[in-house]
Length: 475
Image (tube, rainbow, N blue to C red; front, side, top):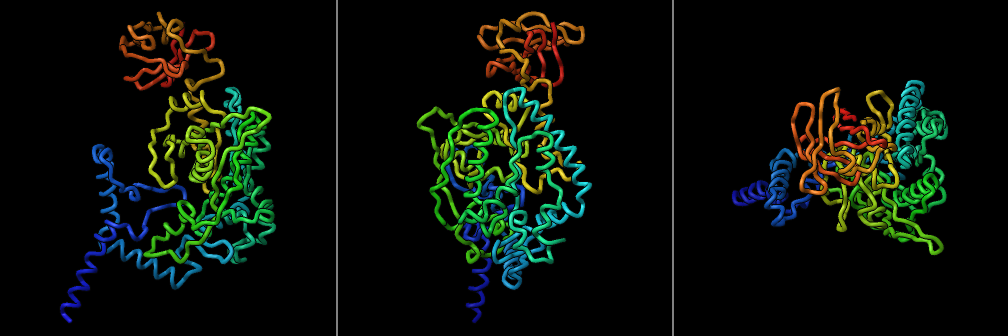
């Protein structure tokens, strides 16, 4: 008996280490608008060992998974899911037709009706900002499309019990505040998939959301990608290749389709994992006319990831650039997968100026939780502020050539200058304080002063160098 007790205690003590090494219990941390994949990326390689990323991943897993507290938390969550399956946590409810539903999306739906007047005022202010943003991009011949990505509660409110809604589901959406109406009144191109999905749901045989996720599923995002490409083509008069979403299979849900299960953080959720429609997108070209690959800059929250999956699968990784919350800039490789950790850099005025030279459209993807219901949320994630800097490429800018910028300049009446070097695309800039730095021409449009960490564009008449710190050199 003593040996048996000792053996059981030994096994129990080894559970955290076993979990750390195998990851057999999925406890990935995920939140409604962001998720960290660091702890899910312990794959070893010599390059990761050299740059230290493997050590950091192992350390993150050890911190997160070793010890009794994480196991006790998951055990407690498992008990609640087992005994209260319709209300497994304070953040989610479960319905037979929709699966898990985030409660905050239901609260916002009711709030849009209860606080309609106040929210519509905020929407009106935000839509004016969007109109100015659209106008600025239009001057650069770049269309802006606002994609409003709805949660389950807004597409299927009738599936919720009456106790969760302020009024009848059929009246709720038509009576609530609407951001898309305000955007349309300002002439902003908008795709409100709340309305589009509600029209589709009676004719499309596949579900638009996984029962275990809060984002639209990958198939719904594929259909949304088709609509988006058509809209950009109509605005820009450019014929783009389309996405074929017809190859779709019902498969065990994975990746973001299971994000609510990850959030519940239980010992096991395999019994809740169901099949979801999963597309294998392909590009479609027209035989009768040339159509180009789309190259879109996506700006927004996590709903953009499903669109990006379909674009990369159909057109390749060069078809998208992603500004996640206007903080991290993602580009993708040929081995792209949604569950991979992707290399990113910080979004800056320089990266925006360079990217605007090489894209066909800017797509703002805004989910329900990021709509500008209060003055604290802009809705555009700060894109308007960054685009408003004097150095982001404007329609009156001139191609940057060394012969056009060499010589003397003035800044606030003080002397500055640009001198040539032995390199064909590098010059030496000297400012009004007689401080000098090497600067390089990039993309034929930008003069990048590396050590000053700023860049400049040349005005159309060649008489102004507009620096990203707000300084303007004249002559």
